[in-house]
Length: 143
Image 1 (cartoon, rainbow, N blue to C red):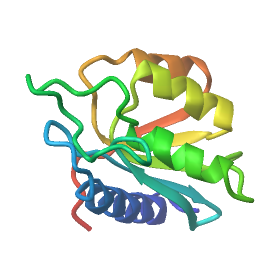
Image 2: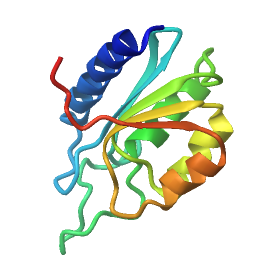
Image 3: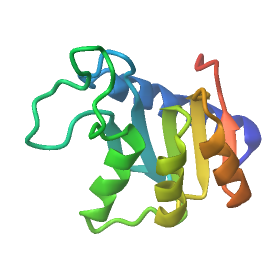
Image 4: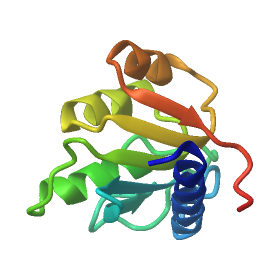
């Protein structure tokens, strides 16, 4: 696909991920993720508590509870419980992955990560780069 056309699709998918993040009940950060394979969305996710837990991501002091799932982990887990596969897919996410989620991304077979904003700790990005995963930062989502 031509570079200009790819950028157009990348921005569109990132805008979808951003909208998906708005579904999160978390107050500190609302992160959305979309997994795309062969130009088809195969999964989505946003950060939040596991199924069956109350939708409060922060404790009484405002810190994120340890068991809150990240958007990319939720999206990858949805694929794992379906007939789809992440192998060869692209992950679109509003905030770059942490180091724990980066391991999941690599093991899931995702080959490209497109993100809107860099997380304060770049260990996850460094790991993905070392693993040979294509990383693309797109801050301006205008068409």
